[in-house]
Length: 504
Image (cartoon, rainbow, N blue to C red; front, top):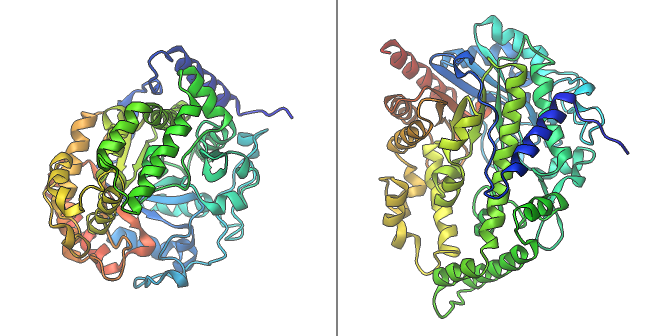
């Protein structure tokens, strides 16, 4: 069957592919053509917040906006596309609701919470994704005018995490998922599959061309990792080591990269980590054996680089689509928190390159939740690559290479990380982008953790906001979700932001 992509998307994909193949001797991510950054309308003292679709209906649009303005919010990131209900949104979560809102419906289906013109997906496989969850509720048409009437901006929060619910409820999605080393389908879409790329770019067109008067900007997010990161495990990990589909294999051939050797190397890597889980220490130890495996199978890192380059390439293409339609409207990226924990992921998410295709970066610097999250990541390192040692043994070295000054391993769950963590990550990002991209740290307000872990208090919010702006942040995103936040912590944010901005 013949398929037709939107014309702009087709030409953009062709040009990007040509640019990529032209430089295949030394594979590099081809950034989108640089727009005039001075033309981008970035709001001064930017303060955003993410809003799940059901919150508008549970509490009423005007009531939600009242709470947001008390918190100093001037930019709404409304979920326009989402397949996740979230841990604090169902009765079975075990996490109590804050002092507003209701639990979500466990029968949540997911998809798009706005009406889109089919022309942006004409001939594409993934073209039927309008959410049935809230009737005819259209978050752009029904909410954006009320947001803008208050002098606030409305951004589409386009959230693209992998989800079993997506595979179940989006017709055709199972055909675009990654394939692991054993030939099994995963539930994560492949960034090299042309149908999935057409779906991603069509959504950007549907926002900016379909709602030019309502949409002020795009926030694009996806929390996924490549096969090497997945093999290590921990937070943000996908099931399976992938992708080995026909599209990824074709890109590998252009790079002179053997898929068979990559698969063989990853199988041996999983065997090593399985031995670590059973304390079956190799003669030369775990790390030496790991390094020897990389020397024997450099394809392990080659396949990781292929996945990462593909991810960067897709984001670059989406930026190009957005700038071609609305060059003045900000298009930015959510950067997942593993960037601040994993030295391996940090190496792959190089801000000095990412800045070329983002008007802003929202970095997830959730310092209260960061304590237990960092502890969990250290546990995974100790269970895999560094199984020769316990976390408390290598923690001082880890802090040095990550440039942190935090507490003891056994205290991380109950103390979280300090506001200094927010400041250091903000400074690092600002130094990397060299003034070309705005940096908006994510301020932790009740990011869900276990009931015995660190809980957010108003003073935590105040200290984190001061740390971010003292470090030079261009704005902040109150994080993660409005539906998770206690009003007393939101009020603390509003008071503190008022004081900070009065002095600027």
